[in-house]
Image (cartoon, rainbow, N blue to C red; front, side, top):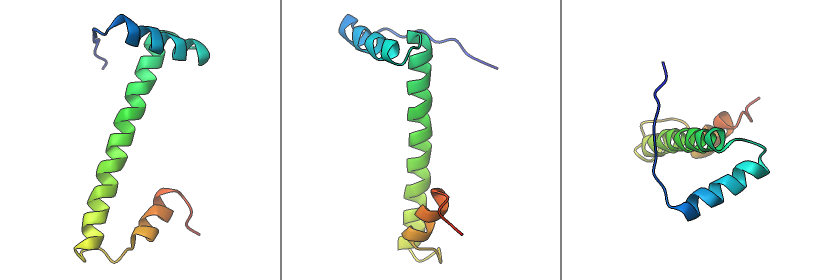
Length: 77
């Protein structure tokens, strides 16, 4: 299921977004969707990292931050 959203922004912001979209050879709509999608993914990653850090700092996790980062980045053997 999808939802349609309408956003209002200053002309200057739209011009910047349109410029970046053109550089990426994307429509403004697709570019804005990609930016929002990346922001949401980054926010979720941050939440997970902060929860893991809290767990490590409180002693609830046997992992270290290094272990978590290696696992998250796919650097485990």
